[in-house]
Image (cartoon, rainbow, N blue to C red; front, side):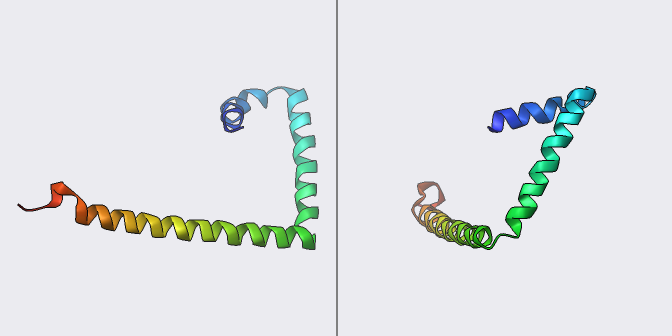
Length: 84
């Protein structure tokens, strides 16, 4: 998916010069925006978004803690930093 997105972003200026593509793009984006507006007002969607954000925050906190521990241990145990 990331590769498709990258290719699209690179070719979008050329594609936007094709009238049929502009109409298709505007049609798709119009309905995409309507769907997002609908979902943003839906209580179940808001609860799910909050749960996903909370989960992502916990994962980030654990990742940061592991990184701090790892950096601390390697700073202490790194033979190159020893003054023998």
